[in-house]
Image (tube, rainbow, N blue to C red; front, side, top):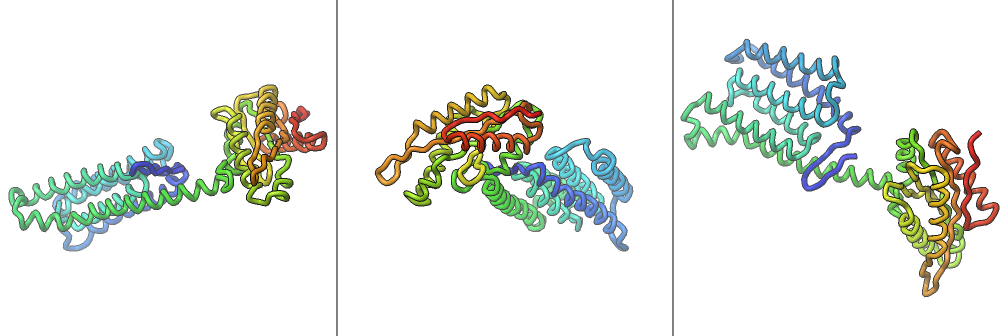
Length: 347
């Protein structure tokens, strides 16, 4: 996922893959724009040879990184390199077509907007600083000492200020957009009541652990229906929140507790076998049994029943592992609640 922290934006790899298609179109668009401009009748191109060399080298760069060796670099490094290459190509094109007076100056806006959306504020500000230096250098090369007269300098700055403003505003909008997307992702992957990861998020983590030993605990609250009937749904919700905290306190750092749904939680214990998982489940059962829930000046007791399954002893796939834990949980309920049951070994 992307994150937004102290003005920094880090776009997730999946988001970058989506932006990558737009970056590719932008690269070709800039190349075509320069080519088209240099071919318009009456256009003043001071160094046509330099423009041709720049276009050939830039086209070769695009082909190399996009099509011939697409995995040469990946993720943010690739996007950053492509962004800096676009700036370099545009700067050479500006130098050959009028320097600071070139109509291609607005091409910088496209690159800076793309950078603000994908690379964040710091990189964008660095690019704006570089563009500013290049622009002033080209202005000095074109006008010499006259650059420092108030009239000319004001005129040149009036042309360049929109680039700075667009960079600033785009980074602000981008931060807001990514912050909103991060909030939506958090809500999509977390249970609203307990704040725990939901089953979808749990399954993703479990899939990532599938090649290493791990265990799953399926933990069901024994008396949620009774609490709901006697004290109401709000009391039942409070009980589930308390249970989430009690169970979580009994897990190790690196374990994952999630809301499975209804009255059930599911826990992932990486790197443990069935014996360790069984001991952890028994400790959790005892911890819950010793806890109390305050309901309308009364103390309610609650217990849990737990089904335990370990990979690869009880199942070979993530789906089968959860199913094995569920079978063990159902069997435990049949033989008596407030208990722990280990799944049968896979045949």
